[in-house]
Amino acid sequence: MVKQTPTLRPRPAGTTTPAALRARSLSAAVLPLLAGPPREGVGLGLGYVDFGGYVLALTRPGRPRMPNGVECELEVRTGERCRIGHGRLATDGVEVLPGPVWDPVPGVVFRPRLEIEERFQPDVERLAGRGEGLTPSGDDLLCGYVAGLTLFHGRAEEATALAEAAAARTTHLSATLLRHAARGELPEPAHALLERGDPGPLRRFGHSSGRCLLIGLAAAAAGPAATVTAGGEAAR
Image (tube, rainbow, N blue to C red; front, side, top):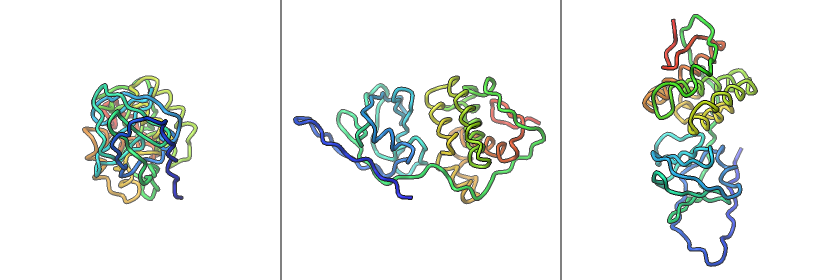
C-alpha cells in the first residue's frame, strides 16, 4: 500500500524561508507526528531529538533506518531546538521535507531460533532500563520479545502492556522504541533477519542492541521461552 506524504501548509506572511532538504526516506510510523500539529523538541545528540517524550531518530543516508526515524542529512546539536508538524521537520536554519515512506513492519518469512530449556518470563523490573548501551541491553531484549509477540503470535495487546510497563522504567529513547516494537515496528537490520534469514546486519547493529534484539525475537519465536538476564544472555 502506498502511504500518502503529509500536505505542506503555507507559512505566515513575512516568515523567513530556511534552507530545504528532502528526506531520503522516513518511517511510516513517523507520519502522524510529521503531519500533525506543530511540536517543539530538543536535540539529545547522536542524531536524536526528544519531542516531549517521543524521540525521533535522524539517520544519515545509507545508515540503518529506524522505526522512529527520518533518513536525512539534518544535524541537530545537543540542546538545539527543533520543530515538527504540518509536514515539516525544521531547525532555525534548515527544514526537512517529506520523502519516500519506508514501512518499519517487516514481512516475516524466517523466524530466529535459540537453543533454550526454560520458558522466558519477561521480568520488567529486572530488565527495563538495565544493562549497558545507549539503549540499555535489557530494553533491547524486551523490544525483540514484544515485537515477536506481535509478529509471530498476533499477541499485540500483551505486547503493548509489556512495552508500556517497561517504558515507565527507562529512558525516553528506549520507551519510544519499545512502543514501536510492540506494534511490530523494528530497525532495518531486523528486516534482513525476518525477511531474508540474514542475521548478520542485526548482529552488527549498535554496540549490543542488535544481539539483544535477536535474543528477544528468538525467545518470542520459541514459545515464548527461555530465562534471560539484563545483560542479554540466555540463562542455562
